Length: 94
Image 1 (cartoon, rainbow, N blue to C red):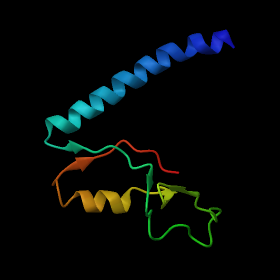
Image 2 (tube, rainbow, N blue to C red):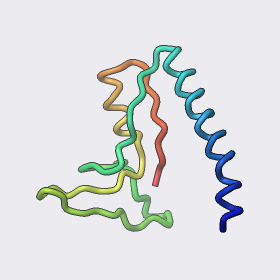
Image 3 (cartoon, rainbow, N blue to C red):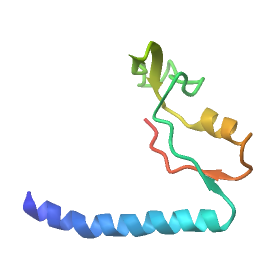
Image 4 (cartoon, helix red, strand yellow):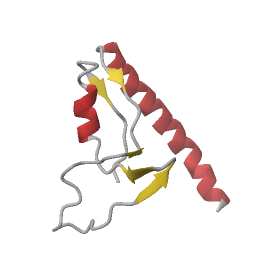
């Protein structure tokens, strides 16, 4: 277990430098960074595809609002283009 932790240190350092350089590259070219939307009232309107293995979209109630786990940032990216011409997001997709 401890040897795996030692192996992770250089990997995490490389990952940190790569993310910083990618972010700098985009910002230097006039892009605005948006943070990923993890939960929202809506997600990709095409999801889940009935033919896919995804048949359940997790949801929960928070302050009397039903929220879902965002499966795709497509809709959020499209809406954000109303505020900025050039955007980028480092985002996981579930």
